[in-house]
Amino acid sequence: MIKRTPLYDDHITAGAKMVEFAGFHMPIRYKGVSEEHKAVRQSVGMFDVSHMGQFYIRGPHAIDLLKKISSNDPEKLSIGQAQYSCMPTDALGIVDDLLIYRTAEHEYLLVVNASNIEKDWEWISSHNEVEAQMENVSDSVSLIALQGPQAKDVLEGLTSADLGNLKYYTFTTANVGAVSDVLISATGYTGSGGYELYIDSAHASIVWQLLIDAGVPPIGLGARDTLRLEKGYCLYGNDIDETTSPLEAGLAWITKWNHDFVGKEVLLRQKEEGVPRRLVAIRMNEKGIPRQGYSILSTQGEVIGHVTSGTQSPSLGVGIGMGYVKSGYHKTGTLLQVQIRAKQLSAEVIRLPFV
Image 1: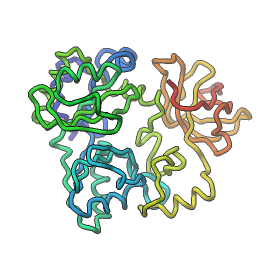
Image 2: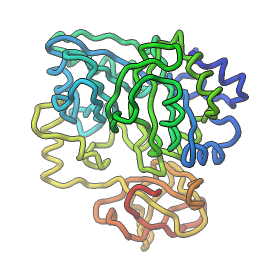
Image 3: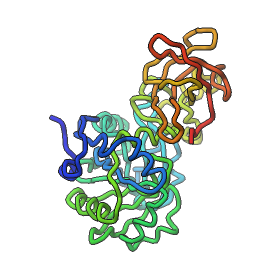
């Protein structure tokens, strides 16, 4: 049975094209991916991301559980701060990437990918030797991402929260319109600034309509994907999964060695020995789109990797992508080729972000 978010009827009313994604009916687009992409880059837009999972971890030993499963160091979090992290496997893989919010002295909110809700819950539970309290609130929490350079101006007209002092990766709880207790987080997946609003699902449609009335256009998952790719943000299932290590994926910056976590020893060994491949950003030098699964070749024609994410960049008007290549071919400026059907087209490794 494909699930529906609490905003399903709002999407239908807005004329969205719906598709199945991670077990949910989700809007892929409303007017068009390029138009929606540019709205977020240049002004503002909003996404329904209520399919994401949310777990509360509570109790005096909650931090011990989080330190066990998280590559980043959750002990650094103060109340009101959020942190990006991943959960490594014990075999050089990634169970999932996630956000960790410290919501109270002994309480944390974890936000995980929709396709991994059940798997993540089982993984965390299997390592809960300290008997921290766990609660899965995924079905009762909705999430609206208000993104773009004008997001602050829009939200200021709807909330009493002091957005001016809400720094990147911090959050507060305030009203949005008449809806109270909305967790307003200065985070997002577009690289254009903005907020993520965690709302009791019973009130999600009210907040959505408030934003519609404020002139905010709804944006589909198609533009969400092109926006995140232009900034080089990893997508679980494409760029990272249980076969990719955080070090290969360029996530060494969220891998802290000052605490013991699942997979630490094998990751330390990989760090010492060197990673066999690297996730790189590729920009096409010829007309073509580097789609997921396409082969990446050296200029001599040797297959050295594969594309994990790719699109035609609405901002740049050229094909861009990310993919894994053999170490040695990962340096900025390295010329490569991408096998696109019968042609081997020129591409180049560039430094992220694309825009």
